[in-house]
Image (spheres, rainbow, N blue to C red):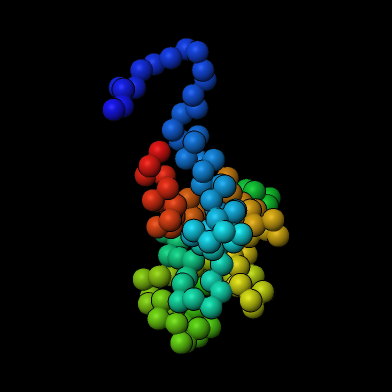
Length: 149
């Protein structure tokens, strides 16, 4: 039988949010979607019927990017709109749905089709200013793990 939780001063227990952040980073970089040794699945399209969008705060993200890069960042550099995206992947149903756009532009790597902000180390190069879509995304595997915390 369990005992009720109590406050203690004998050990430093990190806040739940910090634990969730640590578990999220570990899971996303070492056990992506429950697959040991894989990383950054939500930041790559690959062969699946998946899209990195819609990005609901596209204008705000462009503002943050312009400050970050110290230059005016045009929409077309960062986002794919419906017309372009539906033509890129005519066989993928997610790319044929206007409500899935704007999507983040993909880098030139035909095997995994990564987000343009995914760095070689599988970390987001704009993590601190990323979109709300990216900030709030949790795969089912990660939701299951963090729900237990």
